[in-house]
Image (cartoon, rainbow, N blue to C red; front, side, top):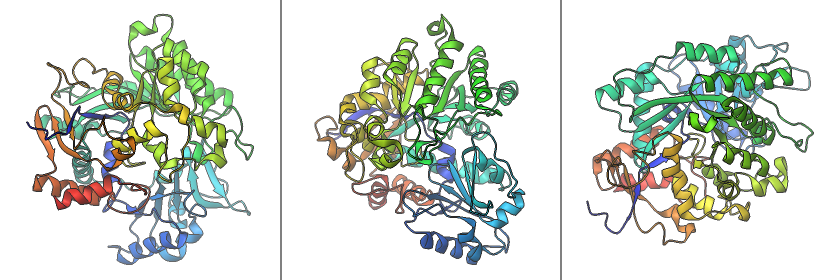
Length: 527
């Protein structure tokens, strides 16, 4: 086919994307509560309560940002407008949830409720829970929230796939939450056109992980090039924004964060983390561990090295650190020596800029997601959007990795800039390597999968600042066109999927300045 002077790339491999959650992240499944004031957020909940089909149905929302709002929304804000409706509002990062009193009553939450290891229950001056639950404490309330129906989850997956294809994404690594039953069903029916590499959710204790591995049944009758379960995700700590990432040096408020692994003491948590990593390694599973804090990254890498043993490279499991915000130079050298990868987030770097400087300080703000240092050390580096945390805009991610500029125009870490070709590799060739699939995808060569992304214009010749304005023209999976901007039906389907996912609305999913996928979706709809 004639690319019309555009750049022909291997299909983009988003190596950290919550595909199923992406489809469910917007309406009609979740309200968009990404507002700049508490009053605006409350107004969204009030309207939903007034229009609810029953007097006590659940109201669900997603997207509030604590650094955008004056504070987190609390039950005292929600109770006056929600009536008998239980309300659950997830923050944009999925590391905190805000609920009203009705939801807390259903969950049995009182002032005496003890959070699980690594969890935080916000309390007011009188010691009463405010309705904000962080990290593992979210489970105390989310366990009583009704799940979505099978039909809703299936439709949401289809929406997410359309969204990803419209941005040239042909493969995604889903860490820990993928609905394997629905994916398998779609593969067997020939309706899944996104290649999915899945990590099983490992739980927070060694016994929970054992239960997962013992109960796991590999999907039968599916093409592993479309759906492949390769590993386990371990969730080891929180995030810097919440001050829940475990750090070697304390945050300005004196706290250090902590592990989110089960255990009554820090020593027990650390021992359980080490045991979980050994269990999965001995079972032959790749491990991707969420580790944002530098102390967590140190501990995870040390546990990887210990579990892999002297012949670790021969096992070829390709363990990696998810997020890997602040790895020390010493830890990076250890990672390179043992073939341990780093899965970084240039798209979140664009969102944050220097906004966390008051939380992590200027030195770590300059260093966060050290692409250049990791590549120089020889670490396999991949990039993932972490959608729906932020929009899956890989062109913006490449721009951010090359310029280290945030959406607010701030610059954070010029020493960690990498070239555009290096950044492209983190979304294609190296991402395929992380998926154990580099022999058949990730590059444009004879005999490789015909997964192709065509971008309008010359990606390599443009000023990196201009990448954010470039658009995907065509996406092919296995040689078949799955998205073409000039195709009215495909454009309409993608535009509708954007709208359902809330990606056509303002907020963290469509930051300004610059053009993001939301604006691209509007142009798609007009094409």
